[in-house]
Amino acid sequence: MASMRPFGFPGGADPFRELRRLQEEMDRLAGAFTPAAASFPAVNLYAGRDGIAVSAELPGVAKDELEIHAHRDTLTLRGTRRPAAEDEAAFHRRERRSGAFTRTIQLPFRVDPERIEARLENGLLQLSLQRPEEDKPRRIEVKG
Image (cartoon, rainbow, N blue to C red; front, side, top):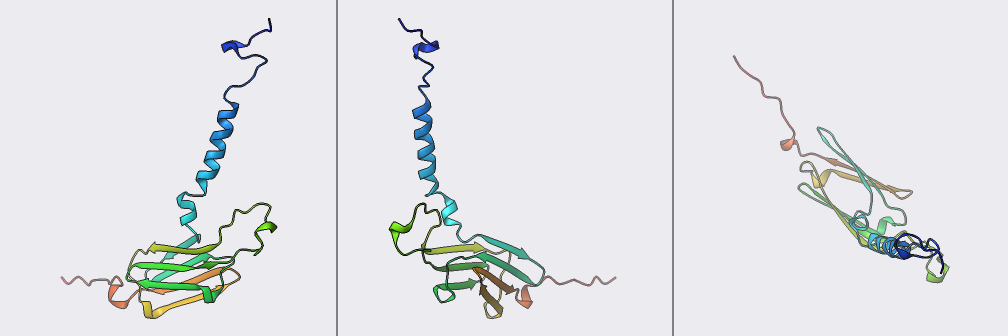
């Protein structure tokens, strides 16, 4: 009779190898549906006393396929990202998502929608959002 490893599995076979492989595959598939997909585009936001600077990575998005909306303290980026190659058969691996996207970002304070500047260059969107004068913090003079 062949020698048996602990738990009776011959030849050192790992009974959990297939289970681990299935778990890895499930994790990979689940990754496509996680909030990471909802966080496109990646955004950096810098808030100062007078306004907010936003930079968003938008590779593959044309400026005519991008909408920017600001209302009170909410910024919404909406658009469409075209695939790098139109022919699906050309892909060996496809990890960059294409198609329609929407990203809504809560801002730290209200912004003036009439005073927003936007520039899209080389896949990088730069926004300058100004705070309304009436919302800016003011120093209060203390009288004695």
